[in-house]
Length: 604
Image (cartoon, rainbow, N blue to C red; front, side, top):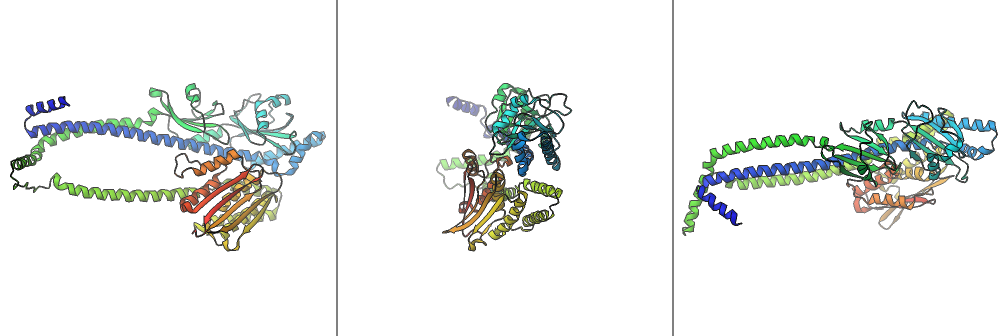
């Protein structure tokens, strides 16, 4: 500190006048402040932009994954066509004992079934489907292609993987079909279909697709000019690259960092630095990777930096001129104050500083009041923002209505029309109209349990027709609870989950029981099914997702997860009622699932 004191005394010797010292200090301080503010602003802008870009890239990756899984789920449903008619399952069991003519008729009928499934809902990227028996025999092919002899099929890796998954859809990248392909195959899906009581007699349905799905997703993702996204399989081998011919650009070191369920990191150096964001699909186990060049991300900062430098130079020049012009008027009040201080130092306390100017001292109060006004404005704005944010979140949750139900219902109506089941079509159409009339005409957020039950009756009517009486629907409602107030669209997502994730995959008839009762000040509403149930690992994943904060950045609503209805109901009640609402899911594999809502009786 001695050198600073020595410098101060030397400057006082060189510049004895306060005005000169003030001007010199002013120049130095202004220069330092401009440099400091410029550096801090650039650093803050850099970090803020990096954070926003990382967040945006993660959202884009999750959206791409959502769109891809949504499409995969629809394609998986097409492969389940034989399960809807017991005749096909019986013929699969009896196929080895059939004569040649019956085998031919069965193969033809099986091919027609899948042709009809793929044609009812046209799929732009569909190439072909093939049906194999458990011994590797090709039963049918939509374009007469073959993957070799039965022994070659049995030894094929994709065939073994499909058998190992035993009813779960298998996603894999496909080698080229023997011969010249007019349309290159990007990936394939395969599914084992069998009678659950017969482990040896089964068929394997395989469908091949081109790159149309990935190209369409890339066009809708609104990527920047030099950004691209990749689809990697389980071992990080590229399946698709939106920048054709660049799949090998990613170094092995970067690929080795792509592991786990998701994340983001920077890789490369200099102009080749890139932001890599990725996520792993729980449905297909493939990874979606988004690569964004750093140079493209931060290019706006270069122009900001240049503009800031020129602005600082101009500001410094103008400040210097103003300091020289107004230095006297600024320093004279200080000199007057100095003379007054000297009087007080000598013991003359009668002297007062007569301030008549409306200078900086007079403006302190004004600035303080202005600061108070600004602070109040900021606080009010912040609370309004939080309220608006919550309203937007709530509106977003209401909008998450799964469109698959509409598609499946329309498919069922079309299929029944082919067989001229006029009465069933009328019943299903009326029920569907009642459901959509409930959704569109009833604008109240709060409805009664009775209104929700009418909606469920319409929904069960549709599914009972669709699954040909497979669903047994039971009600146990206490009489005084029919007018209990609750949020609109509470029960339908839970019952829909019970149908599609519980009863649909169950062999034989299934039961869905909807129960409502009161205990003390709590009202319990329960949806229970005796379907296939949920594994302990999957149940823990669902419950963990419900425990996450609603506004958490990594909060996922993935259609592939199978929990979008549960998360939708849980989030809406949590936002509106907080601790006045409790939620529980209990399930055992092969036994069934029960979802219980616990609500305070005075809810409304």
